[in-house]
Every structure is written in C-alpha cells, then in structure tokens.
Image 1 (tube, rainbow, N blue to C red):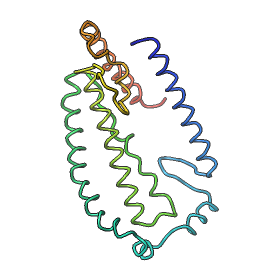
Image 2: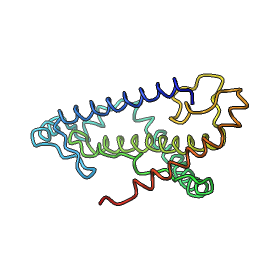
Image 3: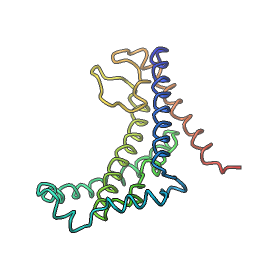
Image 4: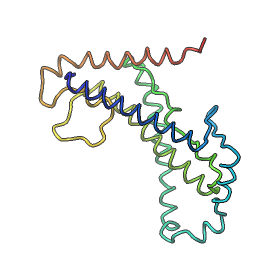
Length: 206
C-alpha cells in the first residue's frame, strides 16, 4: 500500500478512536452504566425517562397518516432481510474455510440496547429494534462482502466509491496490471492473518 495512504488511514483510525472516547464520556455524562450488555440508569434518569414516555394510544393518535400507511411496506422488508441474513451466514460458513479465512463474528454487529430506554413505548422499542437489526445486518454483510472482494478482486474503481468498506483503500490501483498480479496473494495472506486475530480473541481470559 502507498505509504502516504497508509499514514492517512492510521490518522483516520486515531480519529475514530478519539470519537469513541468522546462518546464514552457523553454516555458517562448521561449517567448510563453499561454492564453485561445491559444499560442500568441511575434512579433520577429513570424518573426523567418516565416523564417523557408517551402512551400507546396517544402515540398512535398523534402519528402522521403517512407513517401509518407506510408501516406495512417498511416491515415487509423484514422477510428479505432475514433471507439475506441466512444466505450471508451460510455463504461464509461454507466458503470462508475454503479460502482459509476466519468467519466474521455476527453478534457484534447487532446491538439492541435501546430497549432499555424508559422513555420509549412498546411500538417505539420495536421500531428501534427493527432499525438496529437492519443496520446491523447491512454492516455484517458489508464486512463479509468486503473480505470477499479483497480475496477475489482487490482493485480500486476508476470512479470514486462512496463509503467504501475498510479494506478498499488497500486495493491496487485501477489499471495497474502488474500490481494486481504482484499484490493479489499478499492481500489474500493479509486476510488470512485475521484468522489468527480471531483465534486470539476466542481464547478464554486467564
């Protein structure tokens, strides 16, 4: 990879780390305590949430007619999403071992912590869970497809790619035939090394 690009990517990773630290500070400011994948708010925060909770009847009566009419279409997408989830899971479980790659961990991409928010009613919690599932699924599938692209076709496009996956910047330049032939196996080896990292993460803590 170009050394300047690699340096820029390192800068981006540092900035992402700083953003996560700032988000952690903000969560602490909200007096939220994340333990064992559950969110436990202090009593005064829970009381505040209860004051802002909207009852189901009031919520339904105040809903925009466009929201009510579009809801069936929105939730109909659930079935294609489940099919995508199933096919991505089966694909990587069958194919990734053939390529010598570690299977992508599915669970970290699906976060459903909004159900603990006291100011959301049942319908709002279902809506939030649905959005979390959809976004988590796309992120999970993107990781699987991104690794697949690096294995089979690690070539940048001639045109700019919006929101490219994290592996894309390491691909060879469009039209550089020699670089493609020279870098294909090293890029595959780079992916295979992720298997060792996953194995280390799977080891039980001492």
